[in-house]
Image (cartoon, rainbow, N blue to C red):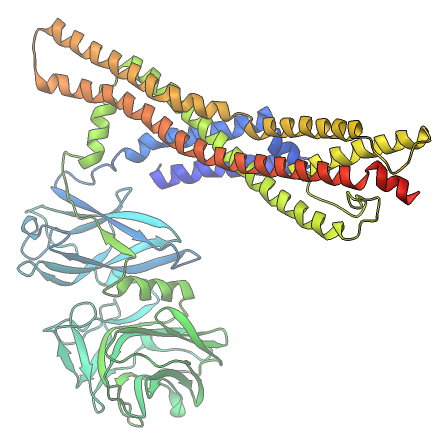
Length: 631
């Protein structure tokens, strides 16, 4: 199972456990019962889930198996679409930029024939090279990703096979809906890279070496590129289509200019253009335009999708305008630039794509955010991994392989301690957050109701006052209120002043609140001792494992009678791994303990201040002199 799937499965176990707990809990069961006094069952579930996550770490550290021994090198390529796409998209071409900063081109063939792109599970990916220059040390490859979701995935670039022949597949890099792709590669006439091989009828623009990706095309007001009509480019009435291109407008633009025109019968057409520098889309005269102009001299991704009664205009992956319209039948040719009625767009153009379906907003966003020169969606690892080696991951393999049984036992104990410490920190942080919010709610309610209190109701009207059950201040108030009521009731039964409390009674009320405050402190500090055990015991357990491991290593060397650094080093390094494990337990537990302790102390100070204020308020409100005066 891939590493990402292992982590997803583990987190799924934790989520399902919490969901089952919530579904089984009675509706009237207060949340505080779960937070303040977590049951053994819940602690077990959190503990098991954390242990499963810890066990996933070794598998995360292990390297992916080598795809083929015929290839000498590979490099990891991370594709992270988090924040770019929401729903999963299929068969998305992605641009991979290789250069001297991330690949040693001396290890590749002169024409890059040995370059391959493979998924983490060993599946070769369709790709083609838009540009490869070994002398300039630059390669630009379009790779077809079967799936792209909101997250990160890793693919590998393999190279270093002098006997390999090229495996380029431009037509297979795009799905069946893609009807036209023009790269404007420098030094070659524009051509369609898809399997449709649509004919470029004429091209009067100028090919330039510096486009967005490799080469590009410069257009003036009179220039155009015509693509002959074909079955693959025909759009039926009410059908769908997508057009996209990267454009860089000049500083001086005509009042209105055409970027793209799709022709149909009887004068029907779809036009994408600029009015000034503001993009718009028009279908048979109906128009939708963006609100802001494009910056001159900068590349921008422009796209239009049409289908299901809506025509949408996108700039840099964001929808900026929408037109409610169905497409007419569009079976004619396609024009980039001047269309006979409008002058052509003035500036640079690159990567003209056309599809016979309305691509999703996620597909457009992924293209816009992954193809630019400053895009960070695709990241190529700066270090190559050689066949027979696993780089940094192989070192972990050596260390784990050299661990002795006693070291494994120590590390297992430390893993259990870490899981317990994490469980305590997570549950305790949740408890403290709830208590802080509940106390703030109580303070607001207390202040609001204090103004409504009568002469002899200085503790406010408790019937009107409500607070979350988890509030420590609320429970302290409830104790003080109940103790006060009991003593006032005793005064009424004994014919004493019904609104007077003796100093001894006030002291007794304070004692009851102090007792409740102590119990609140015990609840807040419950299980914190487990963190101190992890802090103090973790490093010593790790050191114990290291000492035993070193002793066993030297004992083995003495028994063999051969002092060899290659034999000693793995054992010593593995023994030190136990110390690392001990520190890995103690350090997060130390930080978590200090952070939690500071929050507990803040709550306890709030409790102390509230009890002091409440005591003084009781003594002032129910002093005998006031009661006598009222009588």
